[in-house]
Length: 234
Image 1 (cartoon, rainbow, N blue to C red):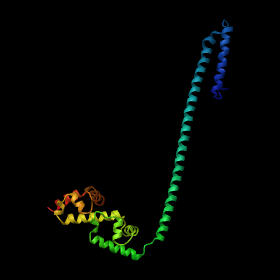
Image 2 (spheres, helix red, strand yellow; image 1 turned 90 degrees about the horizontal axis):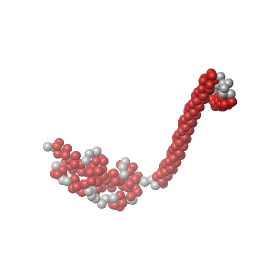
Image 3 (cartoon, rainbow, N blue to C red; image 1 turned 60 degrees about the horizontal axis):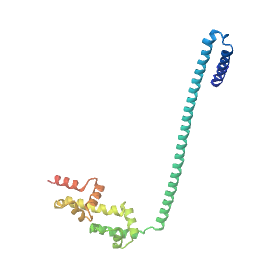
Image 4 (tube, helix red, strand yellow; image 1 turned 60 degrees about the vertical axis):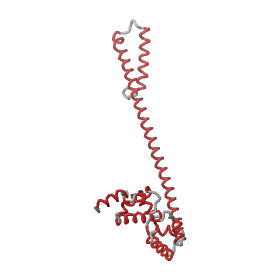
């Protein structure tokens, strides 16, 4: 019955009972035990027991492995779900922060709009500033330039951002680098200067700052630019 229903534990249980009975019969009726039982039946029962034990161990091992896989899969799924939920919460917080910042910026911009007269005044003074090459002054700063053109640094910074699409620092760098390129192209003797001398002439305190700014704007270093200019004009 248990063999037909593939119930391994119950089959093993009754095999043990058969073997137990067989051992008692051996002791009490050893002179009456048929020869075929001693040679065939008992070894067959023992072999079945061993096979059933091996099968049960195999099934238990498979069950343990399957349980480990299921447990691992569940743990991984929980980790992925936790990561996804946490990421969504982080993104939501960032979105709210960005939205609030944008609303504050719009509110502030609305409250602090610059009149067209002020914008025109600043742009007019900046054109004069560029024409007179005052950007070559090494001590230049946003505050100093704002004071020079009779405005405040906030207005000056906003006009440069709005009308020129860059911040104050990049605005000055671009003016200086464009000046250096014009001078190098127009004057051969200017190309004989050291990079440090050119940098100081353009308002930089050292050659490294000048080279970095030149490379950021043009994608090549000033030394390479000078070398190529000398070759192309000889």
